[in-house]
Image 1 (cartoon, rainbow, N blue to C red):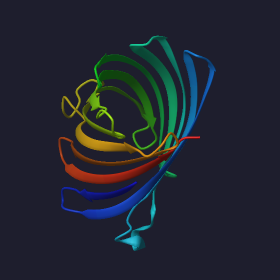
Image 2: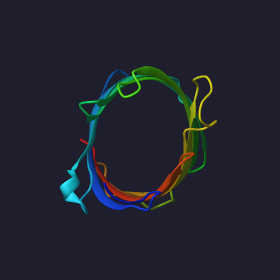
Image 3: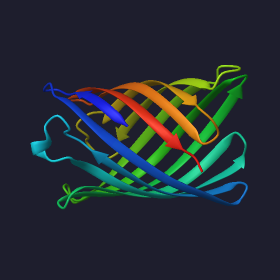
Image 4: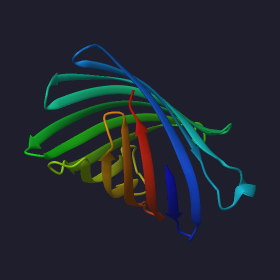
Length: 203
């Protein structure tokens, strides 16, 4: 995934991210997931180092009904020896399908232990996603908004960050998918734009 970012103070960067996920369903309604995300950054300023972060994900999801999924997961985010995060999360995702449209609302409770703060950080993440499968084509545009709210006492702001995103997926065949997207994310003190392209291989 290549990206262009613009931060405050203004900063332009290009990087890449490789995500590898393995999924296994022991029974029809249960899916086990393990994944690794690895990001390279600073292509324009390599003297700062190319390593961005690595993120290890382990999770399980259960679909008791076609229109709802519940998930539990653990993530280990490594940014530097002094900057690591352990996150446990629980999520519920109700989904509504009407024609070729799919609308879902994912609500996630997170508990993170960050080494920099040496404290437990509680967060609530809400994502509203709408996608559309264009009839007789392999194209699926989508839009979503994601809001992260801090749950600890006396937070700096009522929100931690808000992300707006619009993208388009092209399913070349059953094994290959290409995508492009644009997102705008802002926090109480900064913002950035991101343009990304992606490729997914399903085996």
